[in-house]
Length: 416
Image (cartoon, rainbow, N blue to C red; front, side, top):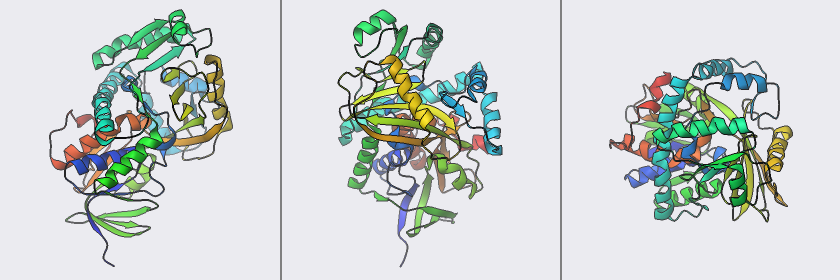
């Protein structure tokens, strides 16, 4: 049988691949999305679903290296490095450490905020325009503190964020406790980011897939791509469901991007940063808006359909073991802050890999030395938050339109 010939072949059916597919369809291109598993089954599935321009500051920041070294042998620490011999990881960590300074922090913050500030209103527009039923609410997000020193550190940082278009409101502990009955006594203070929002990520990705199909896009699940070859006129894929041919290909494989990129002679210095979450039935008394319990780095998200504790960052390769110590740390953190820290029923215990680059910026653009291949990967902890802006940027670049913001900081060539 003759293999199907498509316009754009998108490798990866997570939030980034599907958002890119939707934006390309709107631009008049045809798409076929292929995923080795089920749509949204990777990092898009179990994250906390917060939409966070507030998270523009990168993980690589002054003081992070010293803190990480202190946490290195603490299995339940918010940032954990599993000791092992892995030359690629140690090379990545050295490059990451070199960026933990004020100049690079500012550079990354500026580039991340450009993506996030474009994505936030664009996502709201998509929810309305396409009728995305994903429990989206524009209610802001709170950082909550019991440690006075940590609170003051973030108050100082919040003042700097105004230059990047990130609004903040600061509350003392007593005022915050009066406004938020779900909190236990002992809050030192809180910082609110009124421009943030939230959604249910698994439903968001499912809705993107629905709209892509309704607009004529093809989606193939359980379709593993084993090989990509370029031709003078396009690309040819070898997949578990047969050959596929197209005019162009977009690699949006998240934390699995590096191994695939190497087969094309491309560098994609992405490390899998493992995150965890536990989803419960909704407790009777829940916070009024999403929050991050900053002393313990635990994110709390509430939907009509459930309640989720999540976060942590673990560098342990592609180990898919559910680490009970780290799952328990989420619950311990919630118990320190919330009157009802968990729901009566556990719906899901989950882990997934965030695709982390050492400069905390994704790779977005044409692949070096490959005219018909594009990269859209490396969004770290912000794939959902950056998805709509990434999709539109990729569509603009691939159709020759002028993007809404400068794409230079995300060019894959910076790692060539």
